Length: 511
Length: 112
Image 1 (cartoon, chains in turn green, purple):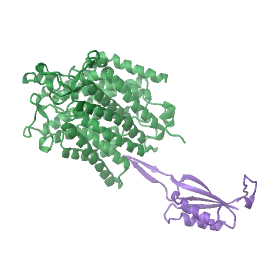
Image 2 (cartoon, rainbow over the protein chains, first blue to last red; image 1 turned 90 degrees about the vertical axis):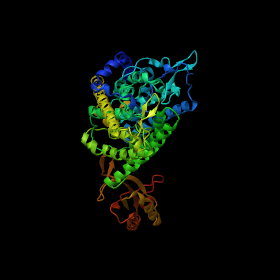
Image 3 (cartoon, helix red, strand yellow; image 1 turned 135 degrees about the vertical axis):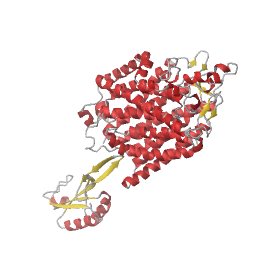
Image 4 (tube, each protein chain N blue to C red; image 1 turned 45 degrees about the vertical axis):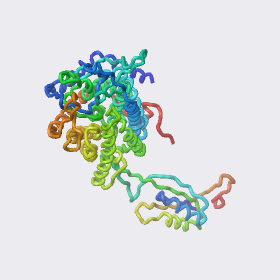
């Protein structure tokens, strides 16, 4: 227990200690981002669905009364936040827990719930500020350190956060809480890749480093912008766009986190699977899941919670939230069918684990697309996502040769990349998509004639590549630091005995 | 006195128990076991990972019976446990030296 507290304290102080150099360091760890041509930043390709900035009261509308949050929007945001928490605990914890051997059940539950809690704490200390306040194109600033200024406790007034509609705001506190759950689930997702052999303290130390240097910059690059009200007139467009995150400036579309959450976490997982090494007996001994029943329960909770994740990312209770909602339903169902059909063709039987994996694959693939494509587009994305992720956990897994225990890369990485690219295809109004906002001053959409699928897919591909490289480099360095300081793996005896007993001193099942 | 031990398919246990009761066997002991014979194991596939399961679940029943009853006991187990498919199991018969009923101290045939 002493060791654990020491690790937590180390993690926290490490996180705080690097605050001062965060922007410098993150710029250094991303050569790809630095060399990216800034000239390609196009204001007119701006996404309707990139997440907004902190409060952005438009300077030009000083005379107009300040917008008041709509109660339905606020209520929807808080409900969505609860749904995302449901995805992590118990959803993801049980989904992962059922997939490991019974001797490691509690270790996986612990790694998920404690990672989520650790990241939530860091989020409110410095994470939110670095992701969602004005800084440079790569990382935010310290305006909201310790949630400073998010409400005035004496006056009883609350700061507002922008949405995607002019004149519509939500309390910034609700936005910060919603986004906290995203940071938490992203880090918790990584656990699946090195499950069953990593030290508990190593998990926590890695999470602090990776969250600070990969999650926060990528979230800032994809989702930070000044909000629609900041685009008050033609004259300020360039200035406002230059304040947004790099990928937002490029015009990358990521409705609910295909790059920020899934690709980001999956690459960290894959690097971890290589760095931590294979489980003892991998490929020789049976490592069959100990409870597919619990995995099914977890997958079902993930599906339910994902409505908050995707539809909540609209930040308003409006038509785009409803579009994201129905797409989350239809793409997932399509992916379940695709996975089952694929398995039946490959080996003659469709499996429960396949159906559960298909559901997650579909959810991942539709995440960047949710409010950015039509219903038909979501259906196709789900089908393709299901088939391709089935390949991800079979063919690709053998090709990569890493022991990614619970297929974090095969499902979240492959599904995330497929979803991100196809979002660029089915966003096109010619293919039933809503198109992207072409001009934030008038909020006019790009017309079907002007929409170029090839150009959008290229922007999506660049965003994917940047995320892969950024997360890959940060992960590599972070694992190395942890390996050299506290060590990544438990001993072979501890691994054979099971992490429940050796790391936590308890057993999941008795008798 | 003989000890009859049989390894059977788990779902046939009820039929075997009924058949034995029908011919007057007073008690049996049942154990859940694992093993393999000519049926061998099967393979399980979890995503890309394939595992060969060598040992299949079976039920072992043991009954101590008198010499006169042993042939009928064997017949009863055979009829109760047979499906005609591979993996129906086996019956082993041993000589039994002594039996003691703990409550009363009775021994031999009295204790059966």
